[in-house]
Amino acid sequence: MRLTILGGGGFRVPLVHAALLADRGEGRITELVLHDVDAGRLAAIERVLRQQADGVPDAPKLSATTDLAAALSDVDFVFSAIRVGGMRGRQLDEQVALAEGVLGQETVGAGGVAYGLRTVPVAVELARRIAELAPRAWVINFTNPAGMVTEAMAAHLGGRVIGICDSPVGLCRRVARTLGVDRAWFDYAGINHLGWLRGVHVDGEDVLPRLLADTGALESFEEGKLFGADWLRTLGAIPNEYLHYYYFTREAVAAGGDGSTSRGSFLLEQQRDFYADPALSAWERTRLEREETYMAETREGERDSCDLDGGGYEKVALALMRAIARDERTTLILNVRNGSTLPGLPDDAIVEVPCLVDTNGARPVGTAPLPGHALGLVSALKAVERATIEAATTGSREAALRAFALHPLVDSVTVARRLLDGYAAAHPQLANLR
Image 1 (cartoon, helix red, strand yellow):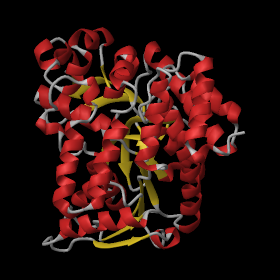
Image 2: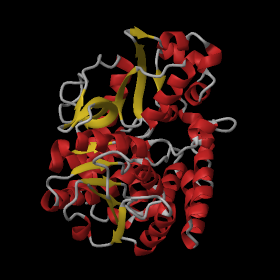
Image 3: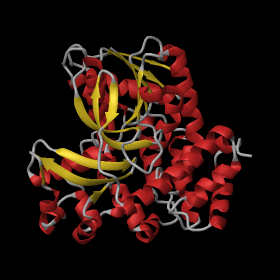
């Protein structure tokens, strides 16, 4: 089995490689190809991966290339984890937004729209090349904004592109650990970075109400500390951590400051040091620091040691590939086309819900409709995503303005116009907007 990682020079690639090294099952990945447009970053990560594989018997054969056609030759799976504009682009996304007094987080708010505007055209071109050069390949998308990018790629790849995220699996893992359950059905629904855990079913019983009633247990893990027991009981559900930006917007903007100490600024400096002198030990130190400071502006105190293992997206990717390649039926929370799963959203909209996965791919499981407050927010964000895709694929400045102005975290059309002007000046990739 051959796997190609697009964005193979990315910092988190060793997490995927570690999961592959630990997989000893039949039908595992035996060849790993790294592709990146930045030869220097590619060489750095290749060096780390070779050190990581040292002494591991039957490690997947490793190669690296800047030639996309070569990377997609005879491939079974493609893992997309590109970052258009690099970490400097993320820093600019945050700074432009915060200068206008609105949120600039890379997948949420104005920053997410800006990131989507420059990423979608590249992702669409990749989808076209994959359809042409590797039509039998399954594409696993981790490129952010994951739901939006998956939806844009699905227009060319259909159900053969599946989006993944580590936020839902992290939430479910923490809730299961707190409840002391090993196996459960997690009723989770929404879109990427905008979902709610509405039930935890064990042997036919929903045990989530038991957790919601126990303040001590509820506030012992990350989401409980983040939102507070009273608000979670008011909702009757546990939101994805990114909903903090919607429920506590003023606090999140205030914590962002002027952008000079933003998450993007921190990661830009951190990764600059790592890539200047790459080694496995340096990568491990940098990764741990990265995980310890994840969403630090929203949290008091240190993260739980159980949440410092890298998030888990690499485990989701491995489980997804196993299920498809080996026809091992499993259930995973994934980003797939809606169909009739969530009433009120278009059939072809990408949603984030539990899916049954086997050799035929991922199929969403029927679930209860979203409550009104959740459907309203999801519908608004889906409209923003679609306007962003329209602008990115057609060059429509009007659609781009609509995406910024309609976002729930942008509170003025006047501000939306200034944001669009600011991002167009900051990012050469937006020069096509007319």
